[in-house]
Amino acid sequence: MVYTLYVELAAHSFAMDLLFTWLWITTECGRLQVSPGEIVVLPQGFRFVVDLPDGPSRGYVAEVFGTHFQLPDLGPIGANGLAASRDFLAPTAWFEDCPRPGFTIIQKFGGELFNARQDFSPFNVVAWHGNYVPYKYDLSKFCPYNTVLIDHGDPSINTVLTAPTDKPGVALLDFVIFPPRWLVAEHTFRPPYYHRNCMSEFMGLIYGGYEAKADGFLPGGASLHSCMTPHGPDTKTYEATVARGNEAGPHKITDTMAFMFESCLMPRTCPWALDSHFRDLDYYQCWIGLKSHFSHDKTDVKSNDLQNGNKSG
Ligand SMILES: O=C(O)Cc1cc(O)ccc1O
Ligand SMILES: [Fe+2]
Image (tube, rainbow, N blue to C red):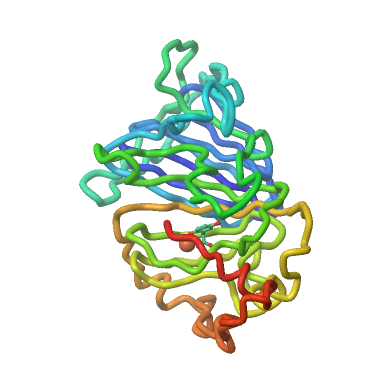
């Protein structure tokens, strides 16, 4: 089980996933208890402390600069669907009124971290009102929309929150999830199609398995497909899908929660990540052995119909 903490800071945002524990996040607006499968957004400028009552853990963090997260425009979906604003929960005021000698504040400024010492708690706000607040959201509340006949939609259909740019459809950061849902598409290659596109895709897995990777992509892991890098399902997933052919029938993907940070910017991999013992140098091997099932024989319905790939990214 993994937790997702999604934090926005200084017109930038973080996201964090933590294994096997819940979080206490204390902010100037109050405290958030964050359970597995929940995300948190901390807006720019908030003081916060993250406590791990069950001990050390790991997480995913994303920061965006220049704008804030908002719900995506629902377009033709209309009034309801995807993440509903009523499910975003803000804390009630909580304060501590006692000396805290040597309380250290760590603040990011101009890309660098600075320390400041003070003898009182920053969490001394007795009451507040307004709409610039930290909040959390339980991903299981998400109401997915999807294909009901043919083709594979753009993953943006599963956007929980977006930090837009001024170019419609080109996000600074989309936070997209791949939740449990029914797959019913006919005459369609159902897993994520093979593609390369202008966005960079950082993916994580919160629990369960990911539909495009039969092996190797584990909860707590992450993958980065930078823009214009071709990618798609591993060979095992591809072969299993082709073998099922068009008679697969409705199938429910259960016990899974993967996510993607999709950005028009190019994330840089830092030395910490590049030098990590956990870096998977053999990742490319998941595509070894991919072979074409294309057939010119129109009676070979099984293979031909599944060649119906998708075009967008
Ligand atoms: O690459 C991925 O696994 C993420 C992804 C999923 C999907 O269903 C369609 C496009 C896409 O980039
Ligand atoms: Fe992708």
